Image 1 (cartoon, one colour):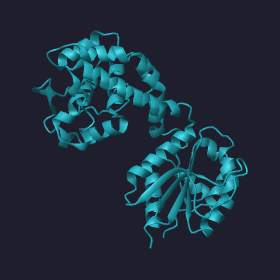
Image 2 (tube, rainbow, N blue to C red):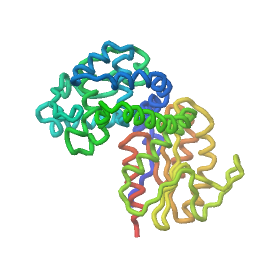
Image 3 (cartoon, rainbow, N blue to C red):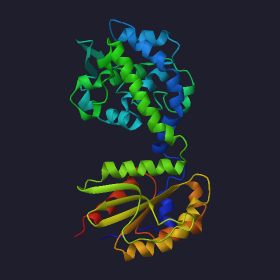
Image 4 (cartoon, rainbow, N blue to C red):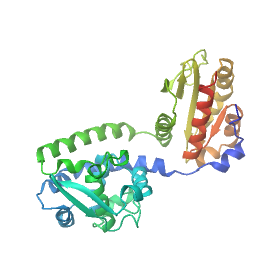
Length: 341
């Protein structure tokens, strides 16, 4: 099995250091929920107004008190169609929309929408003025936002594509009771998902992202992924809590186990020092039990604690920074170990 360990210097060369786009998007989604809940009734009332077509809907949005970018953000959240999915649509535009048109149904009638700016101009949170900070600024509808609204409402009707399967809110137009129920139920879900995360530190958001990434990219059958899991025959006691050692994430398959510890700190604090203090003892027990331990380490605050990071790097079977390429490396390490005979 290749050596997946990195020295402090090697890790620093591939590190993000500051808040990467993936975490920024998660945090922005959390912080904007109160604003979306406050304007939920305005959003529903706009969609409930009868119009002969989508251009009429655009006119209503433009004349309403709800800013165009905030109306669009409602659709993004309700569709669960964030920056990564918008980027995917931009990348697949040629195959999804070869004539730059969106074919859809408007209350049962077949229609065709000619994109106004897309795909010449790409969909992104920044281009659409729907990233966290811009949502508190009022942006009137522009052509790219209109294109995104059409996509999010009717994309699912255009093509049998997994990329567009979530874009189906347009199915509820003309059905006010069903529409209101759907939106309110979705926002109950959004509030529950983000309510607990609102109090999370950046490090906890990083753990959430790493867990989701492993779950989405590890293509091994019979694999278990557990937050706060433990390893068989690893009984070292945590001096801070007095409890048997648990790990941020434990990935298991049959009788093979990989512990993954995650730390992303932009400002320096003692978390990395605690992990460093545990690193040697954990590594020795994990290795003696036949398991593996990996670390995801990033953030300018962590790299200020050079001695701590050096200790962790020396007592890890795999060390990666926080980026998609680095997490792919982590998944490759986990896969190679778990499928070993």
